[in-house]
Amino acid sequence: MRQDKMTTKLQEALSDAQSLAVGNDNQYIEPAHLLSALLNQDDGAARSLLQRAGVNVGSL
Image 1: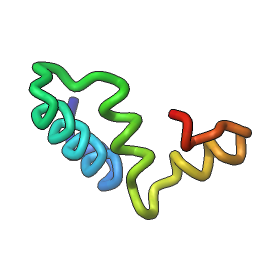
Image 2 (image 1 turned 30 degrees about the vertical axis):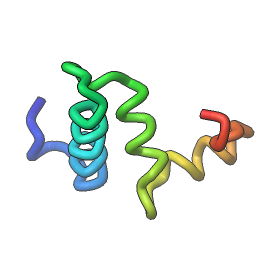
Image 3 (image 1 turned 45 degrees about the horizontal axis):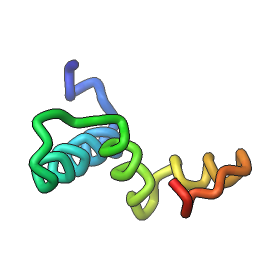
Image 4 (image 1 turned 90 degrees about the vertical axis):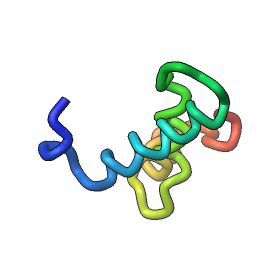
C-alpha cells in the first residue's frame, strides 16, 4: 500500500491499529484493531456513519 495515497485519517488509524496490535503482543494488525482505531478517532467519520446505520457502536 502506498501511504502517500491514503488520507491523513486513514494513516492515523493504521498507526493506532498497529500500536494496539503491538500493545497486545499480536504479530498482525487484525480488522478488530483497525475498527477500534477508527471508532476512537475524535473527528473521524466511522463512528457517526455506523450510528446513522443503526449500529450500537458501544457494543462493538
